[in-house]
Image (tube, rainbow, N blue to C red; front, top):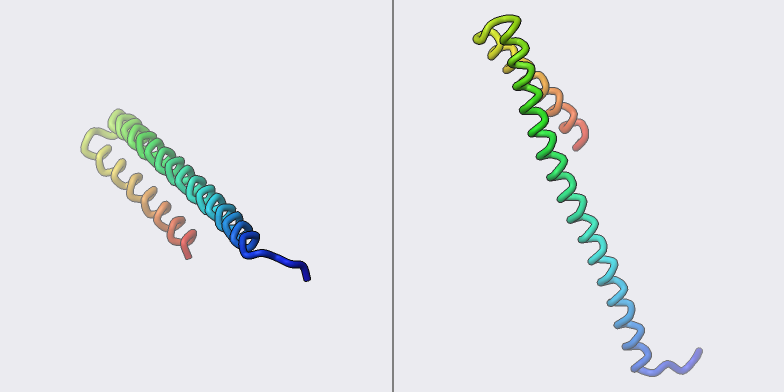
Length: 93
């Protein structure tokens, strides 16, 4: 075995801690970027869904009348929400 001084041990320990700190920092940055991306995508999906359902409502209103269009659009939205709930429930099991 070689002769190792205490200062070499401290230097190697500090380098190891520094490398781990950079790994942890990179992991947090990647997680934060992923969360921001998911929030932006979710916001765009919500806006797109609102405009889609407004368009469906207007189309149904032309065909069926205003009152029935409200009920049909609500039914479509409820069905979509149930499907999304089922998918998210299955994904997180």
